[in-house]
Each structure stands twice: as structure tokens, then as C-alpha cells.
Image (cartoon, rainbow, N blue to C red; front, top):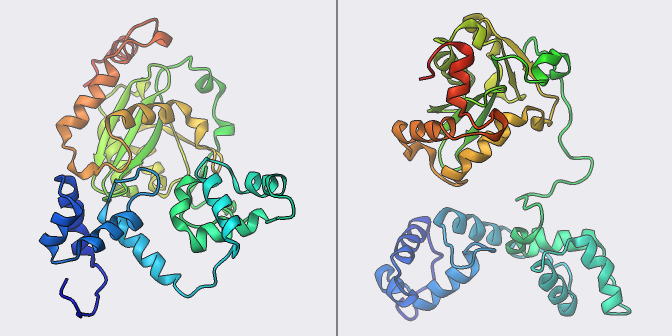
Length: 329
């Protein structure tokens, strides 16, 4: 950077170059030369805007968010004016303590000092957002009591609660009862629809260009239509907007729809567990749009062809094919 020249904030494209050069193992001084910036600017950028937990892990779009947040908060009054209290709070947040634990312990470790847990949260979310990553629940924004999710009238037409689902489905005594869920990408709009048959644990994974109702119902119909009617009796969903066209699925497949209670997606635990297995292959923050169909099929085959203790060590593909009389594709 030329001496005397007015300093300009780093732009998103420069942060993109920093991320690329950083991944190539370039030093701060080398990156600075490439960008025409002082190496101290690069050092400061990496220190201030890298991931708060995984130090050294630098993503350009996240760095941009942190820089913009810091700029927005410039000039806002500082919470926890006592440097001693700030140091105490910061060190113990990084140890994994909650705001309540820190507030309760402060007066024991430092007689005469006190702070409320609310003041600690305000300090973290307004003055020290880099500490958010150390909280047990790393919400980007605060969720205050009374401002949480409210149970609104369902937007899903002719929704039937899981509480009305026949007992035989819960007991896994009959083939043909499926659960549906979605896996989304934080980087792109591409998603996966995951279907699991409850009795056999047989899974179908479909890549969707977007997580829309139209593409979801089309994907489910395409994956289940060629199986016998006895192998497609019901589907249990959560209350996501991608499931609003469930009646079109029922019309095509002859299935019945059931829905988990609001915010109780764990009630379809078979598919939730399967999504956890899929995440071993496709970790969070993976751009699903970059995964080709052959890789999706490989993951599906891996899950369907591994022995399961709950099936007496048959594979889901073997168990499903044996019961429905059709070879799974």
C-alpha cells in the first residue's frame, strides 16, 4: 500500500482472493503483494474475520459478513465497560460456559462484582460477535423469550396429524410406510429429498434443483411410482413448505399423508437418522449442486447394501425386495 494514500476497506473480491491464496499456503506477506496491500492489512483481516472457533479457517463470504457487522456496530455504546469483567466473560465463554454460569460465578471469583446474564448476551451479540461461535446455540441473531416460533394455522391443505396415523405404522409391522425429509445446501439452492421405508430402512435419495413443493412431489412420485401399491401405503412428512403438494403425491401413488406435530421433526426418526448417515458423505457446508447424480446413487447404494442388525443382518435392499416382490432399483 502506497504511503499517504487513503486506506480503503477490503472488498468481497479481495477477500475471495485471500481465501484462494490462503488455501494455496501463501503467507500474509505474499498475499499482500498479490493484492497490492500491506501485509499488516492481511494479518489483521485474517485475525479479525476468520472463523471464531476453527482459527485459520477463512471463508470470504463469512469474512465479509463479519466485517459488515463490525462496521454497522461502530459507534454503538460498549457493553461491559469494565475491562476486568470483559476479560472474565470472554475467557469463560471460550471455555464453553453459558452466560448464566458466568454471571453466577463472577461474584464468587470476584467478590463485589456482579453482572446479569442478559448484559453478557448483549455484549456478545453487539460488541463481540466473534464469541457467538463459542455459545452452545450459535444463533446469528438472538432469540428472546416470547419472540420464538409460534404455532400458526397450518399452511398445508388437508393436513392429517401423525397422532392419527395407524398404530401398525408405528410398530413397523407392515411394508410400504415411508418418511420424507430434505437436506439443504447453505451455499446453493440445490437440495436432496430423502425417502426411507420404515420397516426395511430402504432409502431413496433424489437431487432437486430447488427445494420447492413442485420438485419435491415430482421427485417422490418418480422414485416410488414403479413399486407395487402394497409397497407405497403412506408417507410421513414434516411441516415444511416443500410438502404442500402432498395431495398430488397421494393422487399419483395412492398413498396417505401424515404430518409431524409442529417442530417435532424427531417424530419421523427413521429418516432423520438416515439423513445423519448421509451427512457422513455430504457434510454441512457442502455445495450439493456440485455433487453429480452418480455420486448420489453411490451413497444410496452404500446405505441400501450394508447389513443392519435390526434386519437380522440382511441389507435394506434384500429385505425390501424380499417383502415387496420387486427388485429395488
